[in-house]
Length: 374
Image: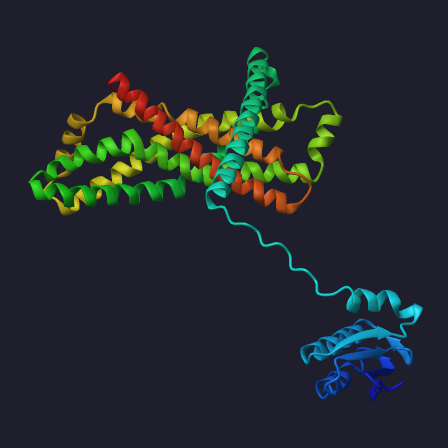
């Protein structure tokens, strides 16, 4: 039935009689009608719902709007004639009063910062313990295979050496070559102010052999192969292949982690040597092309300014970097749980944590070598 609102005047009160169906379909006409309602000055009024044939939430909101509209004009109204079938809805919307706003969250910047710091510290502690536990598993597997070399999957190791080392040579060679050019150019530009351009050779040799060559190779391998390890093992985890291996009595650490660890420990020192050669080659090209230095002078100066210990100080870090990168990549892959999103998340974590730990280990070695006078 069409919705309506009849207004009648009594002795001391004014009656507002709701008729028809007050639903969402008639809400616009009811709202327009309510906007034209004016109190006649009586302080009391009644909203009569006895002739209401239907009502929904929108209609109940219109009733509430009518009551509020009259209250703003100074007229207090009561609701009568409420039918049982409409009672619950109307009471919730009209008779419950205004909805209390949600309590405003108190901002405590210092306490919030301390809470975040505590949570981050707790998560870092759990992460460190989890990494230590996985390191123990890998160590046990390594010792067991060293005692019985027949358990080592040499074909898998060689395959991973090819993927980690041989296939990474183009990108590592290019980056190392360009870094050598940059170091030579920047070093020569600064040393020219003091008339010491010839010492650019010393700067290049020490920088590349002691730090940049191996560190650059480790960072590239962490982003390239560390992420691949996490994605490969993570996908196997999602496809329940690792669960199948455990069902067959195979150790996933020995089957999947150990070959990757050995391949990385073997391949990264070789990549470090390759990065050193390409970095020196790029720097030499820059020095010979821009400074008054011949190739023979460059080699003579390099031999006099760089010792064999400088080369070994840089290279000795490579196996440790490789072990850390492979350990983190395999660990994050085994932590994948149930979805492709988890694979992506753990792969990203593998790259970030690997690069972070490589730099931390490099800083540790720098302090150690400085203490030892190397």
